[in-house]
Length: 554
Image (cartoon, rainbow, N blue to C red; front, side, top):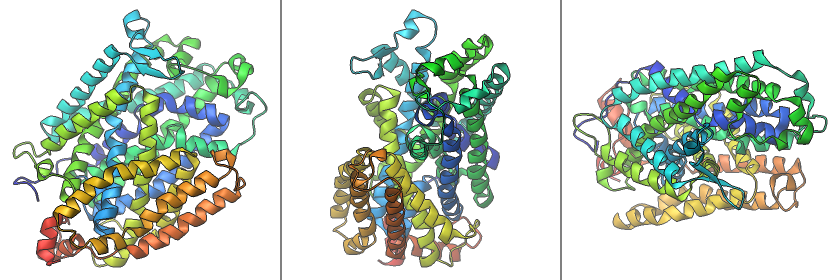
């Protein structure tokens, strides 16, 4: 342990579930239903169902890993245990980028909704640029910067303070979206809207549009919040029960809320608006608030304006907590400075990691000044972060079968394979050229990894590469398939629609099998087994990289 004081296990299962729910129901609910309907029309309802099912398969593999290794920042550690430092670094980097960039994007979402308030000073917080995209003005950026500081301070003193504030916020942000959906359904529901297509023609399910909506309409972006309970596993009571309860419970509850909201949105839009240009032509600035005003629910509109500030802030607070634990975990992998792994002796939280994430949050905030542009960065990294979990879970079943698993997922070989294939499909559905940008995102970080390898004298580098070749080849292979794929997903059309989906599935299956076979019994796993024998019944938390090598002698 890199600290003289261990992280404290003070978060119960219900509070842990609320961290997941609070992360899932953030700015995504404010924009997701509108964006999904614009892409898939009434098929957007199925996009939420499909998205939830895909994320659940991925999340269950992480639930087994999190209960087996209940440690803070665990999402950035598991692939290090199963495949060594290079796969661990790539997975950790993608995962951290996907989460830390959510902190400023939630602050931006709150300010953008403030810009729809009926006052001139508020409307000046957000500007439409000549090229058509929108971004925050300088005053809007400073308000967002203050919000990021608030998220930081609510996490700075203790885990309990974070958990208590998050519980109150999450209960509120769960009630308001559910009430919004039910109120809109009760006040003016137009069932005929479900027969109107994306461009105003007769509706028929466009499967490609549904798939694209899953990947790009904020659905994956929203459900990514399931990671929060896993990253806070080090603070959880009885992690073997708390983590699966939190992960599954948060996804199920959020799915119910999102489906209610999507159905309500489709049914509440006035038919005369659809008659002009279909769902693609609906351009709301504050979708649910504007619909509430249209059906004369002014009290609901006011509540939504308030919640548009609270919901993203609740997610920002949660992600401020989880990203600090992720940096703590990356330091324990041996690829970040030791100071970032220090735990405050009184408050039991990684404060240096929090300061580092605050700085990075401001870089993202002032570099990407609008919700849409920053959300695109998150989407790229999120999908990569999903790839390693299923492979790691199955690899550890092979390389460390004797490790105690408080949660043992039935049918994991099939479930993990399906999860990896579906994550591969998600990456393809995001459309070219977004898929190609992933390679650049990973390459940017590699000098940091090589610096620490050189510092360690390239110790065991050959074995690290042997465990990583599958991922090294996976990224350009999928980018090539995406480039050559059907025009339905932004490709050159060398693969026909339908055939491209089958090719992607086969690619996913091949790399899943290769990835599982590439794993090896790392020093971290060896050290964990020795720790488990020395302290039977205690939670298994492997030591950091250097301590693992010292204990095992390699």
